[in-house]
Amino acid sequence: MKLSVWTYEGPPHVGAIRVATGMEKVHLVLHAPQGDTYADLLFTMIERRNHRPPVTYTTFQARDLGSDTASLFKSACHDAYNRFKPDLLLVGASCTAELIQDDPGGLAEALDLPIPVVALELPSYQRKENFGADETFFQIVKKLTTPQPRTENISCNLIGPTALGFRHRDDVEELEKVIQNLGIEVNVVAPMGSEPSDIVNLGAAHFNVLMYPETGESACRYLEKSLEQPFTKTVPIGVGALSDFIAEIETITGLTNLQNKVASRLPWYSASVDSTYLTGKRVFIFGDGSHVISAARIAKDEIGFEVVGLGCFNREMARPVRAFGKTLGCEALITEDYLEVEGAISELAPELILGTQMERHIGKRLGIPCAVISAPVHVQDFPARYSPQMGPEGANVIFDTWVHPLVMGLEEHLLTMFREDFEFSDANGPSHHAAHQPTSVQKENRSEEPVPKENSSNVIWMTDAEKELRKIPFFVRGKAKRNTERYAVDHGVIEISIDTLYEAKAHYAR
Ligand code: SF4
Image 1 (spheres, rainbow, N blue to C red):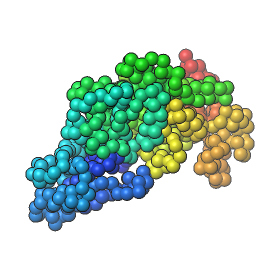
Image 2: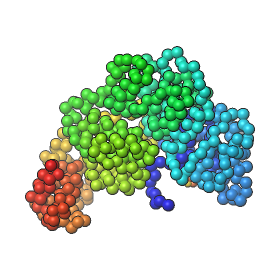
Image 3: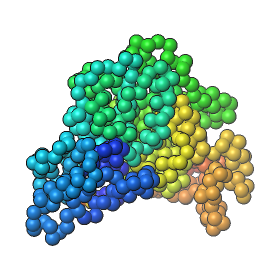
Image 4: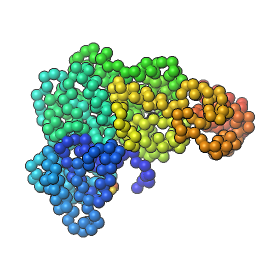
């Protein structure tokens, strides 16, 4: 047992639903208790789809457990087939149904339906949503693909986008533009937007673009082995990654001079003088492995932030995230426990968090600005406007999104100069964030006790040192305070004076 309040991923059958919902002419029969239909809301509300996911739930109840739940499952398959007439049927079990061991795969085979049936093994107690999506798509590909003659022109498949994917809709559109600009045809986009006949046709492409390793890697590996289709390894999020991605395509296809066919506004925006104040801003990054690696690279190489911590919640990506963390001098945090993430963030006291919906909440609680870079996300991250993360436009979107929550350069300067000002007082945060404006009550409290006098280690701040500490801009003050206290404890100092503050500063600057 593990006490969980927030989970970064759903159970694996939600991953299966994401694949089925992204596709056409596919139906999923899920052996599941009454109430599991809540998953529909993810698609009809958060992603705002205008139709129900193509899922039939057996919705068994307590009273069914005494009778024959297996026949309930069989009749659900029959009904689903007769009503929806899909070209492919997926069958699987949710967590509770896994315990009653009705074997949906075997039961569906016995029905002898005139369409292919894919039985899904979804180990709900060991694996999670991303695994469910990856495994479901892999099983579909394994069942349906056959060797095909390659298309006359060079072509590729875009692999990995699903329903409920963070910006998948626009990433596909953006990447299709990029690929076409390179003079390459897009054969099939899958699973999202494809139907079973398209999957049969995957083999006609010359290579695969693996857009999201979390949901498409097993299928790409299978296609590489069985149909000799190479696949790209770099996720094209960010300018540097996009360039590496294009270099990979040059190697795979033998085409040359592709680099100059794609350009983003990010490099100039980030080189322009107004971005100078972004240099060295301390950032913490958390999310799914692929988005975290991409974000860390952009943060460090393309915007000039200092990455002070990073990590991911999906263990499948632990190895590459750890390896990338090492190159930045950070020990990666691999955890599904948001309390551990919160602990790491408050310890590191970054100036910006790049994370998921959970980190937005953490940021709010700790008063640290945050931008969302990865699922899980709420409804506002399925926006009406075009907002990819991949390709040149994706880099533009990322630049704007990440810089927006930060205090603007001029404002930062004013906050430091006029820290007693009623409007620009330094704890007010960015002026464009109404939520950060404190009430007058909070203001009063703050002026009485802006810096806690004591901390857990019982080190005491002298009044003048405390005053000096308040001169430090608020977004780095937490870090300065913690460092000074640690320095004091390490050196047996009980009362922190101005001297201790500066000694600690010099110590940590070394
Ligand atoms: S079967 Fe799984 S997903 Fe459904 S309600 Fe039970 S624990 Fe939740």
